[in-house]
Length: 269
Image 1 (cartoon, one colour):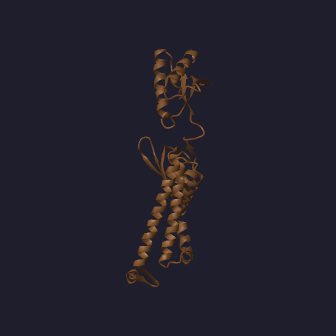
Image 2 (cartoon, one colour):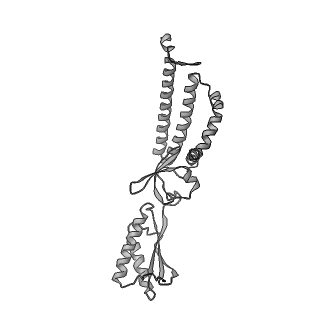
Image 3 (cartoon, rainbow, N blue to C red):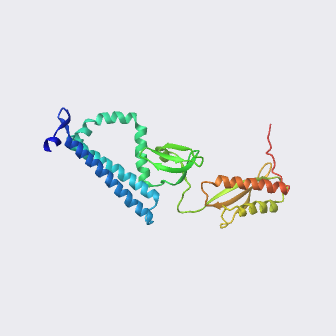
């Protein structure tokens, strides 16, 4: 058995990889998988009991996974006689050269670690970055995946979340968010009737909150129309565009039925 374990599979310079090394590396890999599986199970139980949320579980697990993998790799290399200290020192110049060429990649890697630690955004949040809006599917060490409601998957570098303005629609401190729909009516319109029609439409919509109640405000006197804003609250952070569209369709129908004119904007030639 001893001769079998000490049998050289690969031999070069001062390094020898034997059957023993392969067995040891396999055990290290197995131990790493067992540790990660145990930690993942423990975190899932914490989610089930309500002690942490799914986003927190994912962030903690990702950080632990990277740490355990690095430790496992270090132990594995040391087992075959590779001195990590010498390896890092000897490759310092190479790493600097690579770093200069891959600055953006390193920025993305560091950004991923910061995001996982800070948890300003997390898996399951509905966010808006630039013109993209969707649900975070995963936060990896370099990129994050965002799925839009149309089913389009965006792969976004993590540095974007630190350098660009990000809107997080999943604010846990507030279950409902205020939105608005703007309407224009011609001068001379019966504003009380127009206001009542708009407000009644909002109050009938099943996804608009009854409390706080929807409000209609006269916000400005435009050059060719009076400008009314419907302000309402809803829990539907993702589908608010559909709610606003519903309201506009119903407003157009109600205005037509009551002979309320929506004026064409004046153009100057």
